Structures are given as C-alpha cells and as structure tokens.
Image (spheres, helix red, strand yellow):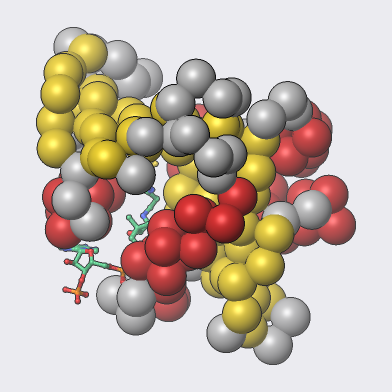
Length: 144
Ligand SMILES: CC(C)(COP(=O)(O)OP(=O)(O)OC[C@H]1O[C@@H](n2cnc3c(N)ncnc32)[C@H](O)[C@@H]1OP(=O)(O)O)[C@@H](O)C(=O)NCCC(=O)NCCS
C-alpha cells in the first residue's frame, strides 16, 4: 500500500467511497472535485493495486488549525491500520505553524469516535442534533 496526495484523477473513486460510507450525506463527484481543488485543501489517499482503500481531505488555512473534513476507509479493509497510517502521513501536507487538528464526528459513530480517541483526540464540545439522523456532533481536537 502507498499513501500519496489525492488529485482530481481520484474523483470517481472518492465519490464511490463517499456513497458507500456516507449514504445520504455522501458528496457527489462535483462536491469531491470542489473539495480537492478548494483553497488550502490537501488530500491523501491510500492505494493498493490501483484501488483507493482510504482517503482524507483536510484544510489548513494558516490560522494554526487543521480542519479534518473527510476521512474514510473501505469497509473491507478496516482495522488494518490504514486510517492510522493516512492520518500520520497528513503531517506532510500541513502548513508550518499548524498547532492543532479539529474535527466533527457523530456521537453515534462508534468506529469513528473509537478511532479518534485511540489517536489522541479529545472531545472539546458537542453540537446537539447536528446530523440528519438527529445525532449530536462531537467536536474533537488534538495537538498536531
Ligand atoms: C473511522 C475509520 C476511518 C477507521 O479506519 P480504520 O482503517 O479501520 O482504522 P485503523 O485500522 O487505522 O484503526 C486504528 C485504531 O483505531 C481504533 N479503532 C478503529 N476502528 C475501531 C472500531 N470499529 N472499534 C473500536 N476501535 C476502533 C483502534 O484502536 C484501532 O487500533 P487497533 O485496530 O490496533 O485496535 C473507518 O472505520 C471508517 O471509514 N468509518 C466510516 C467513515 C467514518 O466514520 N469516518 C470518520 C468520521 S467522518
């Protein structure tokens, strides 16, 4: 497996993963493209045998904060350390001066919350009924 920067060549693969992982909240191909080309964005993809197994899209705008916008691993390839490896690789794309990483995750997303907790993120606030399914968003933070 290799981790490389994501590019617009990855749009179809990422949109397919979006549909698989996020259902009604999935980004369309246009939305994925807009994210990949938006200001201050960077993306990393985990690839094996030309298949994209996982991805991360974040924004690092120079205010000392990295916002994690999207993070996912194909369901057939979980618990193999792919997300951990992709997160660790993110440091290469982060602007100098970034001090902390921020993200939102649904309180009902057991795997997501467990993953971020295992990676050292802590809950700093909660947004009640933030998601369409009525679940709260946990705002989690970690020193870079
Ligand atoms: C969250 C997600 C990205 C984790 O990806 P992953 O590649 O399976 O994670 P890793 O294998 O790198 O896991 C690293 C550690 O996180 C923790 N972890 C990950 N998934 C877990 C789970 N389902 N239950 C408990 N702990 C978990 C474990 O401590 C794990 O280490 P271990 O396997 O040695 O015990 C993946 O489950 C996913 O894509 N979920 C759907 C999309 C999503 O929720 N994205 C994040 C919120 S936007």
